[in-house]
Amino acid sequence: MHELHERFLQQAIDLALENVKTGQGGPYGAIIVKDNQVIAASVNKVTSIMDPTAHAEIMAVRLACRKLNDFQLCNCILYTSCEPCPMCLGAIYWARLEKVYFACNRYDAAAAGFDDKLIYEEICVHPSDRSIPMVHLNLPSAPQPFEAWAEISNKTPY
Image (cartoon, rainbow, N blue to C red):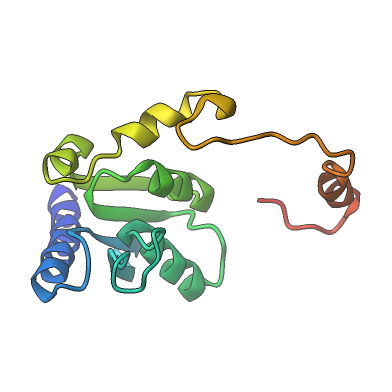
């Protein structure tokens, strides 16, 4: 089974390398596998589609969800060329992936000019003290969307 994981991870690395060679985006590739079959594959498209959220992992999650017609990817495995950044990590948990295999780590990425250290640090900082000001305005109407959600009996929880 170890060889199978290495093969899938190599596919993600190959996607990342090809993305760099073609100049389409950053050095990241990701695939999602279910039942030992690739169901989605993508690369970093941040600069090619002008979308800061278009990381390889996010794009692969979007494709896999569409393919499976589900917003959760239970029983799916993500193989990615690099340790997921905080944004991608959040998406991985929201998608409920079973496992993640990665090649390079965040320190390798930082050495190549992709440093997520600030974001990792900012997560632990109180919103009012973050480097991008985040101001909580306590409007009386603020809880209304959550109250309306709580009243729906046939909602799809996630």
